[in-house]
Amino acid sequence: MKFLDQVKIFVKSGGGGNGCVGFRREKFIEFGGPDGGDGGRGGDVILEAAANLNTLIDFRYQQHFKAERGHDGAGRNMTGRDGYDCIIKVPVGTQVFDESEETLLADMVEPGQRVVLLRGGNGGWGNARFKSSTNQAPRHANPGEAAEEIEVWLRLKLIADVGLVGLPNAGKSTFLSAVTRARPKIGDYPFTTLHPNLGVASVDGDEFVIADIPGLIEGAHEGHGLGDRFLGHIERTAVLLHLIDGTADDPGESYRVVRHELEAYGGNLVGKPEIIVLNKIDALFPELTEEQCRIVSEAAGGRPVMAMSSIAGMNLTDILRALNDFVKTDRESRGFGPREASNTGIRRFEHLPVADEDDGEDWDEEEWDDELVEEDGDGEAHAESEEEEGEWSTPLNDDGEWRP
Ligand SMILES: Nc1nc2c(ncn2[C@@H]2O[C@H](COP(=O)(O)OP(=O)(O)OP(=O)(O)O)[C@@H](O)[C@H]2O)c(=O)[nH]1
Ligand SMILES: [Mg+2]
Figure (cartoon, rainbow, N blue to C red):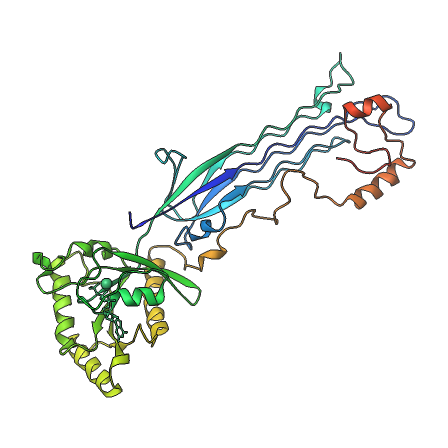
């Protein structure tokens, strides 16, 4: 299918942090009791519908998304920090399917809508939780809940913002290929384009989707040429870009023919904003360009006519800007914010840069060391005996260093 943009991504939630087995040890305090803290919760994987994204292009560069693991608990009843969520921004209109591509898991229709795709694992309990009257020194802590991982398909149905109309050979496909990365077929014969093409253009940091459809000829509404059945693809666009071949003998007539077909089609196409552009001016002397523009303008009831050349790259930016103004106004009237270039869309974690996965060791070891030395003085806080050290964890190792 032409209009479907789809990608497969791998997502993994954060596992829970492990509970800690620890005992309170202080000079002159006997039987300090268990004080191992719980592990933190792992981060969720969350999808968020972003109004300022258009395409799934970002997912070409990154397909693996992982939330952060919960940090392990520690001695002195310290609970491990929760892992950060992984928030994946997708364009509004994205559907999420499971690996088989059949079951719909989520439908992202509202800007700002959030769906939790995977939940992070719970943290394990530390040994302080297991203390009871019959077991006052439990040497057992729970491990954190395991992470979940799945592969899902993201599917986006593109909706065009700008529709290209004009007679065959007006240069619609050439324009699309000049301002977007789309590579439609181009030829100097009518009806080169047999099915619609889409491309994403960007100007001044904004992006919009342009649809190139087969050319219209007189009687298209009666089925002449390829007919007007492709006009349905541009019914929901914000603006039409009407291209006219500047080398035509009577560009005014070209304009009228296409307008007439749009009228006959209905669907409020004639009521849409229209930008009229005389194309191929690289092949014309300046005086002739002016003359042709005047003729088209007259046919269009005195409306302004712009001039450009897709092949020579003349005035393309001006035209994109003019289109962008209409697209932005239309989007604002529908409650969407302005669009931005999409490659800024993915943020793995909302608050912090990504911690290196799994080990959970992002604290400053020296800082911890100082504190411990101060309170514990001579480094008494060691495991009770050599054999026990292997079995359970204590916040300090033999050298009195912090060991999570
Ligand atoms: N000199 C000149 N030729 C152009 C320009 N733009 C398009 N052409 C030529 O015009 C011819 C038709 O271009 P297309 O882009 O295929 O026209 P189209 O409107 O898509 O035509 P259909 O798909 O048949 O409706 C090609 O030979 C292009 O090279 C231009 O700016 N200057
Ligand atoms: Mg074409």
